[in-house]
Amino acid sequence: MIEFTIAVALATLAAGLIAAVLVPRLKHMRVQLVALALVCVILPLAAVAASGAVMFSSGHDLTVLALSAAASLAAIAGGLTLARSIGRPLQELRATAAAVADGDLGARAPETGPAEIAELAASFNRMAANLEEVFDARRQLVAWASHDLRTPLASMQAMLEALEDGLAEPERYLPALREQVGTLSSLVDDLFELARIDAGALSIELREARLAPVVESCVRGLEAEAEARHVNLDARISAPGPLVRCAPESLERVLYNLHSNALRHTPSDGSVAVRVEPRASEVEVAVEDTGVGLPPDALESVFDRFWRADQSRSKSTGGGSGLGLAIARGLVEAQGGRIWAENRPGGGARIAFTLPAA
Ligand SMILES: Nc1ncnc2c1ncn2[C@@H]1O[C@H](COP(=O)(O)OP(=O)(O)OP(=O)(O)O)[C@@H](O)[C@H]1O
Ligand SMILES: [Mg+2]
Image 1 (cartoon, rainbow, N blue to C red):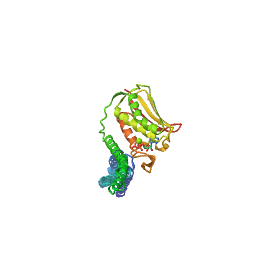
Image 2: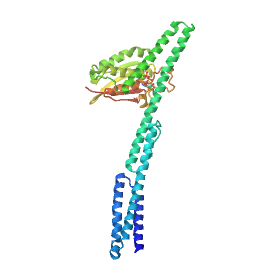
Image 3: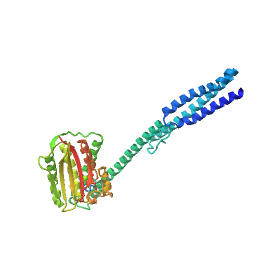
Image 4: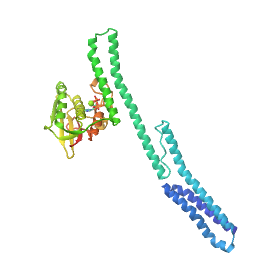
């Protein structure tokens, strides 16, 4: 009889241990918990049922005690294994969160364990990656901004020192000093505008306006520059043009940005044209040129802050700071539109944006 009791107890214990190994392999935590509960109920029941007949014939109470002890041991083993399988990934996730909180933005949690915890770890890793990207972008932004602020400051300092030492007449450096002050103040204005766009503090008042007067005013303002560059400036819009919902001052700023870029990158005898095409619920405005066009892999990056095709970031090529299109995107989106860049099939760039039709 005692052999039978030991055999049933060992079989129960073995079944319990096998269950303890298999349960944590189930994918979902809730399925694991249900499986554990079932094992704890079914195992002793099955063992009691199996030994019932023998018990009736022998009346040996030790069997029941041994079975209960084995089943309890199996349940405890299963519970401990399961707790470990859930606890370990949680512990790793907690350690990673602490590392990120302490400034190690490159820390990532292993995406293991039950599906719920693996998904939590994956979301956490995505959040940490985004955070790292934002911090990198901010670091780069500060580096570029200080570079662009330092360059005109250094040249102004050199000119002032030359004046102080009597090495040059003030008239010689005054125009250059004025130009550098202009560069600095427009850079500071641009940075301020971008900060306001970022903070959502742009107070844009949308109203219904005709496109033609805004486009014409912008084109008029650039006629002299186009003439000096021997570039033909063409505004193909039949007055009064479609009615759109926009903030005319912001719209003019966007148009001015796109036109001055186009003029800057179009060789003499080329042409720059603005086209306006009404669509179903919006109006598409595009500034096209016959210039060098954009690098095909940079059609998205042109809207990044401080991005310039001329990576040397020298002002010798007559370029700006690389903020114009970033501001243009912020302003267009604040007016409910989209902006994108493409190259024209015949050569040259085409920067287009939409505005909601009124
Ligand atoms: N029409 C265009 N043709 C060719 N390249 C262009 C054109 N427009 C923009 N780019 C490229 O995109 C870059 C970013 O333009 P963006 O207007 O943002 O800055 P920027 O003109 O260099 O400086 P900023 O506008 O701040 O004075 C430019 O430096 C230039 O390399
Ligand atoms: Mg520009």
